[in-house]
Amino acid sequence: EDKVVQSPLSLVVHEGDTVTLNCSYEVTNFRSLLWYKQEKKAPTFLFMLTSSGIEKKSGRLSSILDKKELFSILNITATQTGDSAVYLCAVEATGANSKLTFGKGITLSVRP
Amino acid sequence: DGGITQSPKYLFRKEGQNVTLSCEQNLNHDAMYWYRQDPGQGLRLIYYSQIVNDFQKGDIAEGYSVSREKKESFPLTVTSAQKNPTAFYLCASSIDRGGQLNLAKNIQYFGAGTRLSVL
Image (tube, rainbow over all chains, first blue to last red; front, side, top):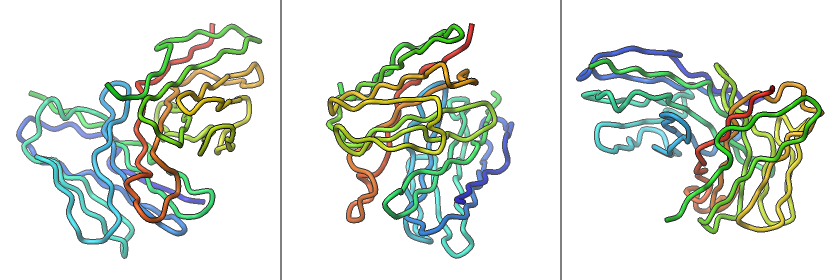
């Protein structure tokens, strides 16, 4: 059974701090790993990672994948209160029944 | 203004009642999905549809039913057989599902969700 584990489950930081969110996975026939940000309702897409070692970057957010060690990290630098959200990691497998397997999410709170 | 619209935002179900959650998209996406989100748990797949008039069960389909009569619409019915329906329900869509050549087409985009509670 495919499995995605995120850590820590929750995190409280102060504005300006840098945070690292972790996602490890066990999946048969890996295709891609996705990060989403869920503030109140709709998860919004952040990154899709398919190859090891290639950093994806968007503003203060960046993410990288290690397919040998089966994990990904999401980094947020110079955090702002608007970064407070639940961050979801999901893994897609190949095959006729390919689907996304989600982790439980990491709740990030950024204090002023 | 393209997107995925879920309605209603909040829904209450009485015991023994079936309720239907609406999901409409104007993104011209072929694939649509329904997930259930419970506190402290990841999103779990209820049903998905790769194309009009076709849909498949996900991991937790029991007590739910769907239809896909139009490309834009993928309503979810929570039946009285679903004994624990209280949850946050999310609908998603993607250009494609399981495509091999352009993985970006598999990215799922989500609606704002419907919160279902039992009276």
